[in-house]
Image (tube, rainbow, N blue to C red; front, top):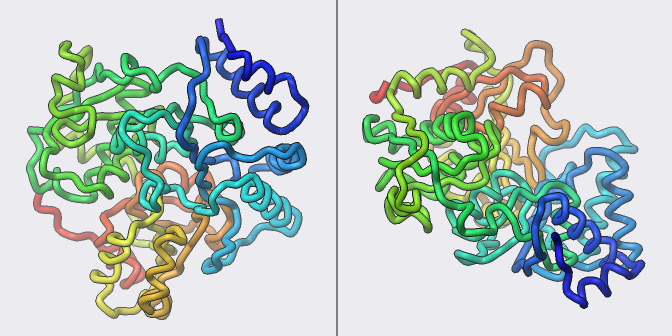
Length: 417
């Protein structure tokens, strides 16, 4: 049974925005069977993305009640792009309500970060820190790569936790629930495959479909990972399943080795990856079938980092694009690009920057019958057909750039295939 402190009971008995927020958190804790509320050091807010008028009215009611965040709170993508760049095709009413929602969250003291990759924009809670984060890829990165502790806090519970400064004590906040029970063995795959960017969204898809909500430890990736590859792995796993935490043996904070991640126990389940399993999962990320048609290319889900922009620029090598390449990123990346004069050069080549939002959460892509979107993102591959109407062709970042230059599908030779 949930027990509130005398101070919490006093706050919850009020009529202002802080009282409303604490009552929401407390009711969620009761539903989850949490015995208490625990302090959180920060929050990442996913609820500022417009899905309907009720979300805007909820946020404005909090503001009217004087609610302010009690901890650092960054904002996930919105439905508009205040920083400019790509044009948004929202109708007038929806545009107005989306803008009102974004203003309301900023009025509560949230940082206008507007990125799904806050961990690459300076928001990196310390290992072992309890936080309340929304946005599935940010949650899995926070837990897995940073070693902080959060559950997947959905829309409106995230801002309630940020205002109250507390979260329910259950799930991944507890060390005993962070122990792996599933072992994924990649040691039978070639090193060239394990060290390729194209592999990690595929691995994430396999992880999500196999693990569900279980905790996995992945063995065999030592010396093969980068932060951006782990970002892509986590995003795909959270899209394909309910993954909130994974371990990579010898890489992530709670997994110096597989045995430690497993809590010294044998795994309940083991998945040994083979090239055939990987090839099948790779093919499954494309829905467009056997076609060379490419109407647009979209990369940056999660938002592109500066090193990823560097790679696009390097691969582009001054050439112009025949198909638009939508580069989804945050203002923390756009700012240095503008300062260095690189944004204008990339835009002249045909790159379309999408900042503060992304192409699968708000209407940006033009309406084209039978359109095909190429992407290197496992998350885009999962969501784009349903949210944009575009069929998807999945490929590496290099293939995405070459296809955008050619205006048709271009495949690179893969030695590991």
